[in-house]
Length: 69
Picture 1 (cartoon, rainbow, N blue to C red):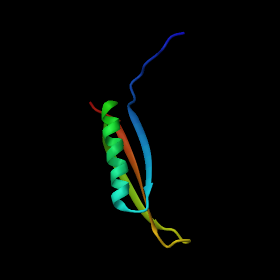
Picture 2: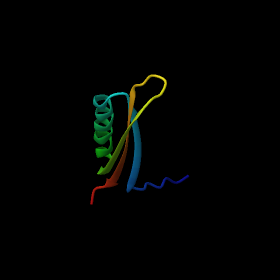
Picture 3: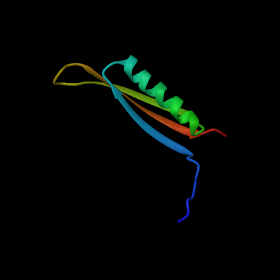
Picture 4: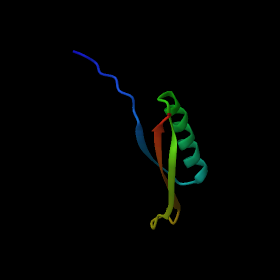
């Protein structure tokens, strides 16, 4: 049985939270984790929507990581 190791070149991750501080904390933690894989943030897209049941906002973000050149 052989192992083939390949480097990750692109990675997209999704995050959600009920407040911006928590969302930012989740993203920051993942940025630190991805540094080990030699990935850096390429782009961030974020949105906010209100949940009709609770009336609370739901913050979401999509972070695209790319390999460091």
